[in-house]
Image 1 (cartoon, helix red, strand yellow):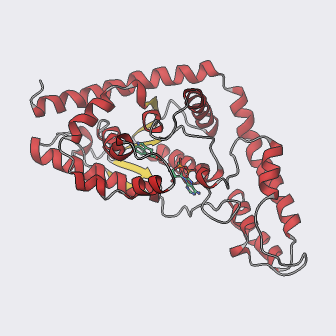
Image 2 (cartoon, protein in one colour):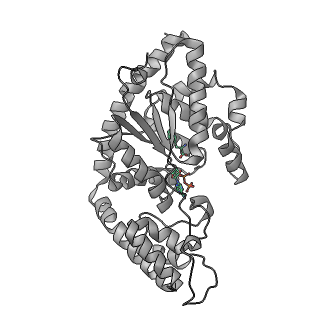
Length: 329
Ligand code: ADP
Ligand code: TRP
């Protein structure tokens, strides 16, 4: 019986991962990093990893991947990920992920992957339709099941992948006995999608992002470029449809949000709105930036080495159970 599914010890073990596939933006921070930090605070045990093997499905430039891997760990440590509270590790350093992926792929029905919408979306966006891109939900299932995770906090876009991991766990357990904890996705319903500078979902694929750790001049440019309608300077504006307000409110408390909304309704100009948003961004990002500068590359390497060693112990234990169950040991 997997330890975390036992009714006698309903421990909350959470796991989540992020791809190192570009610079982090405000959508990643408010939609993923912040809720992950909150979950880490609530969980009994928490695992967080850099999904660098997955990044190979879209990044085919060694220097870019190396830089993204280095940056993403510094970014997360700066945001408050704490190795005392979570095991922080790298997917590619734990060979059990790919080994388990193979075993899981032999019980995964083709139809399960054929229904995955993220694959189709990515191919539509122009990403090469590789075998790796198609089968990566099985790698993600291995990521989750190796750690006997019971809760996986994810954004809506990843819900289907956690359901695939559930289905694979159930299939495996039915075929070979109770080896895996069956994970639940925890969808961050309360976190609305963060809008980008063009009003669509903020995403690096749309080029509409505001960076989390950007240079001031780039942030200034991104904010200046926020698309607004053609309302006159002193005209009343609807905060609900104003993209400047929609981003600005992320940095504010409830009473401040209400006050700013009232100002838009009584005619705050878009130019002034943008100026105020830049100030709010700088106030928000200043402490994060300072913290990031105080963390050295060698600190980050040490965090990962320790995390990799801890993760590997758990991963090896599960893989051993799997091998026994299927007859490889
Ligand atoms: P991108 O869309 O820029 O490629 P990713 O797919 O790498 O972003 O997202 C990493 C994490 O950040 C995911 O958990 C995703 O749900 C979250 N996320 C990304 N963009 C947004 C957004 N605009 N609003 C809320 N959450 C987001
Ligand atoms: N697929 C996720 C993404 O693209 C990242 C990821 C990989 C993940 N393995 C995971 C998230 C396991 C949660 C649990 O954002």
